[in-house]
Length: 287
Image (cartoon, rainbow, N blue to C red; front, side):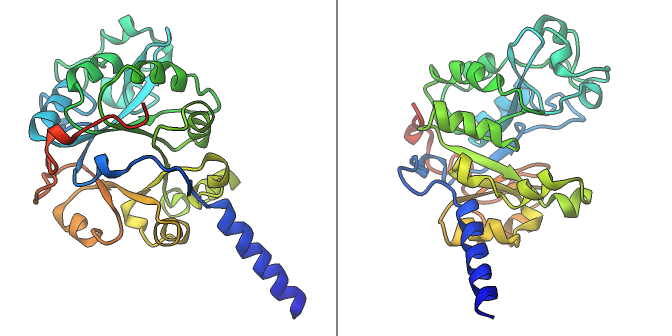
């Protein structure tokens, strides 16, 4: 019995160490609080402001919402704003984003609008530090070259931003090269959503690589707020908790006590979080 208790205690201790986020020298989270974040901009995929378009981003800025957006590389290594690795859903063409140069990507429209895939640099110039940003890096496998290329642009950006990714390698790059930038681990209850797909998804669902990446926040599918690792990170380690993607006021109200920040889509949140702290108080994080 004693041996079993020792093994159990060691297992619990190792688990708590594995999921431990950054505990010391955390970046200032205050500039991100009190604001709702428009998922891929304040978009309407059936109208003239589809997801991740400049028009959707401008609408979010004008309304005072923060913005969540996605960044990956074109064939000629230009950081562009686009969510899917493939172009078919949004642009109706075959292939992946990195199969085309930036100039070639400009031939494709976003849904039925006149909007085109934006350059990350052009997006940042348009926002101009007026609202805080959550920048998601799209890293499909092990190539993290989007990180240094996009970060090279962000170094000159005079606004509030943080980065996040499902791929822990992106967070590891930031820990090694830009430790002062606030970074977040994206996760989901993959077993519930997609079924058992392998050990890696189990590791990612339970954030067992936090010991290596040391995230400053956990961005989790709000439907699975009860996941043990997520709750321990928030309640025990006081790690910032971000909810994705809330799609109704009812969902938002139901999860207010479980998360600190909310990424929203398909509705306009009620309350004061749109520009809640005022644009003049926005400042750079991770410079």
